[in-house]
Length: 139
Image (cartoon, rainbow, N blue to C red; front, top):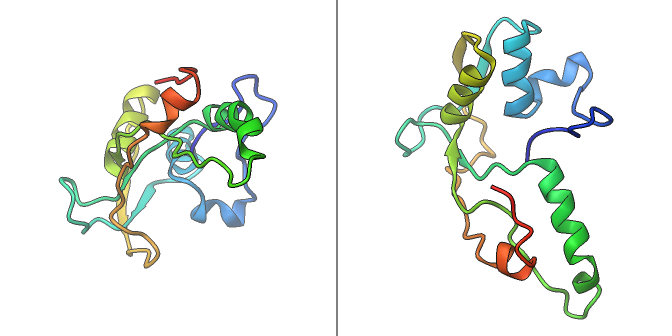
């Protein structure tokens, strides 16, 4: 998940001492804005095309919309389960390259130590999403 409210009412802006552990989106924009001198990618030796983890990034407002859409179904017993995502994964490196393209900034990147909690990652099928959520899906 990434992003913040398009109206600017809510967003991710952690305390300075927590920024190094923040999400890749926040770190990319911190680097683009000059708040940090370089972006550190944690883990670059995964068995993926560019060596970085693959994630299915979904915007926080899309996640909120999905929760609201399925709220009534969630009260059933057993509750309905949904895999909310795009169904297509992007690597951390691809995310960073997109951030560079969107901001027009030359973000300096360094390789960091592997986070032991990271798995290679994958994008699960989001087949239940668009159909079950009455086609509200955004891409």
